Amino acid sequence: MEQQIKKAIKAKMPTYIQQLSKLVSIPSISFDNFDQKYVLESAEAVKQMFAEAGLTNIQFLTPESGRHTVYAESLTSPDKPTILLYAHHDVQPPMREALWNTKPFEATVSADGERLFGRGTADDKAGIIMHLAALEQVRALKKNDGPNLKFIIEGEEESGSAGFAGILKKHAELLKADAVIIADLGNFAKGTPSITTTLRGMSAVSVELKATKAPLHSGSWSGPIPDVGQVLCRMIAELTDGTGKILIPGFEDGLVPPTAEDLASYRSLGMTEEIFRNDGGVLDGVKLKCSEDEILTTLWRKPSLVVTAMEVGSRMNAGNVLQDSAYARIGIRLAPGMDADRCTQLLVDFLKQHVPYGIQCNIVTEDGANPFVTDTSHPFFKKMSDAMTAAYESETKIIGCGASIPGAELFRSTLGNIPVLMTGLEDPECNAHGENESLYLPDFEKGIIAETLFFGGLC
Image 1 (cartoon, rainbow, N blue to C red):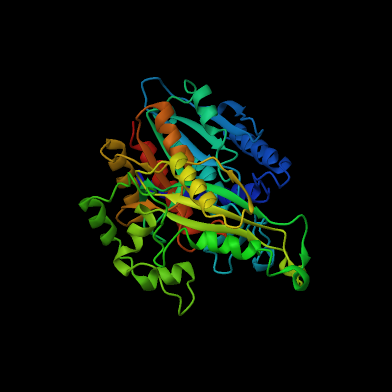
Image 2: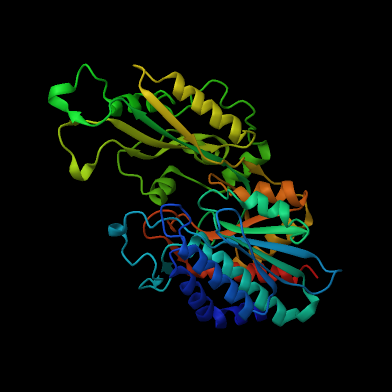
């Protein structure tokens, strides 16, 4: 069966790449300052693909934002296991388009044929096509003897999944399943199949300082009047020490350290500073804030603060001006055991306590997501691990992830303590969220094979 599946999928890869390219061509950016008609267009395209694949009960599950989640199902028999398949059709902005080597919303195969470039190729439109392709293959192989499959493709994951909890709660009976596959993660390295078992949580705050009614001539007014740009920089600098340790009192309370088994698994991955620097494009001379043997635990099991945006005047129109306001967005990554709401409020309180000179300070919080840890004792995990090992012809690794998937905890809290299998097609070179995002096509093929083998082994 395994060789038959591999041969059939290889023959269909041009079709699967074409389907993915169609979705990539839609700039479905789910942030309010972008045209949301494209998120609707993307949802409609997924809906059409579901119809063409013969799925039934196709419908939009729509949150208050109007960014549709798309649902569909392919059911065989009530006595067969039911797997809920998750991915998302919205994407990040293209960032600095001048740095793209190809058009961000035009899927382009690299000269060597190994990578498909375009926004959403790896994160996460490939996950949609992987699910559809595996459905097609398992139905061709087992007809109605295969598992029941339900699809839920979210439309606002990249902008925080604000309405996803409501969707799951409202449609819990419709979405009832024996397990969930979240195809929005990745492999530790190209050709290394990986199942993710821990996620960091996330939150963010936007801070704006204001000292004057309008910008002023710096020669005539600076000195007596505080410079909001410098003040904001000092406030941010006070959040951490020189090693990156967060200085907010009580911020890390509840942090769950990795077990001895976790640490042994991390060591087995063979991460080195050289590999990490190369994968991250770290410039020569820039020092890491942790030792080589702490890289993975720092990424996966410790919190971090990141200034994701900062604005004081305009670089394109810089002049001798004392600015009236300064803005920064500060993102939080939370490690297992931490609570998003609590830590966000601690950050807000700390910032407000450190505003000098009576400067006006306005802080806006964003919806957060708690960290996630999954139990791998369920038999489905071994079945998935074995399927991935067979597909990739390489041992499956158990890894963590420094990123966040809000849906992971939402699935467990809403649908019950069912297995949450976190897989995906990203790799360290894919540059998800950055310029020149790409999908490694050999792993795209192997991912489809793995999911097909998993489905085929359930019944």
